Image (cartoon, rainbow, N blue to C red; front, side):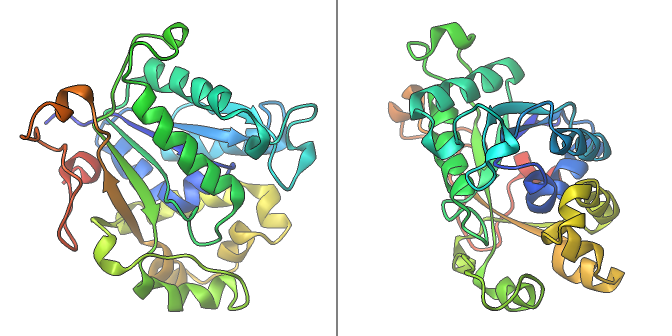
Length: 271
């Protein structure tokens, strides 16, 4: 079986490990090409070095940085515009360059809420990735960014309503939490066998551990709590509409939107 290539796009260093570390590790283990694009932080910062270590643990190659500043941390990319303030066309162009160079079969990013916390950088990363995945396949857009390439599906990392009560005990009941109805989840992934790699990648983000952000909270959890809370990942499958698909009523293998509750698509899960 040919394992599809996977490109993940997340807002900050550590988002890739927390949101999709299990799928990235699982995919790499069975021989899939995997890579991660990170929207914020500059390549010469300590957090970029931590990201490199996390990606090494996950088998996801070297960091690919868009180089914008974090909305809440100006020194994350000195002299650079905040990601949310950058011209949308410019951000999409930068991402399209990575998509066309890596040529992924599938992509993974934040859901439309930006995951549980709804961070503005997460929401904007979702927006840019949805546009970038579509634009990458259109030859008349960004011709200087490489030959057109159309990923066949995007998977949006999310959380169903049913998972929130247990997670609230970890992230705090006073913080806003965004989740989706359980029936919207089209891929529920057991990443238990890769949980050790996932947690090691999360903890590689040492500065976030030290300042008590979510990696720090995870560092303080006992093994049974880590397994209960982080051994499952949830995704919503989305298929970009291509010119060829628009002209045909029949969908090719793996190009549907997913559908029934609990349905798993082989292009992501590598069953």
